[in-house]
Length: 141
Image 1 (cartoon, rainbow, N blue to C red):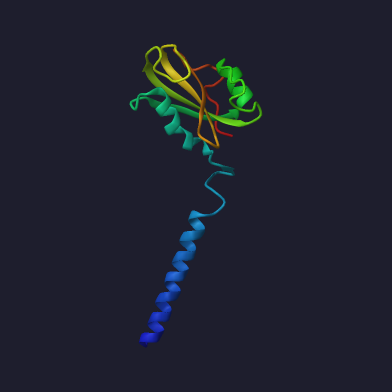
Image 2 (image 1 turned 120 degrees about the vertical axis):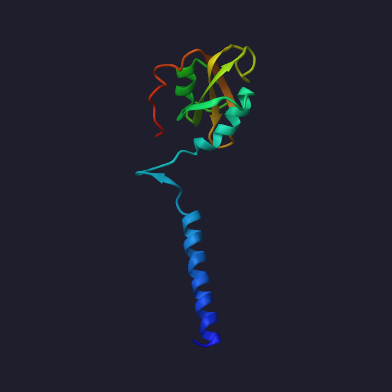
């Protein structure tokens, strides 16, 4: 093979590899089965920051409408987020002392933090000794 052909073949191989790599990274998003993986996993750092304890461990990540999340956790969201907007509820295991979790002055074993899925802003939290039974077993949509 001549030097010119080797260079052309090398350039073609590089272009093919670049094209495959770009399509893998910039495609339609990550999917699990037939559903896209929730962007709520991006909200985990905001929730961890709200509990002021890097040792807290993740119990669950759930995506709900703001109205449903507020009702489920008995957290009044008011005008902080539109009731029909999707939010992320991040459940973390503590323990948490009174006043430790931003948005709730209670103490307890679990913190459930409500974070907007687009701006990753904490809009509410609840601290409790148990995760609400209606919350357990919920899967990401």
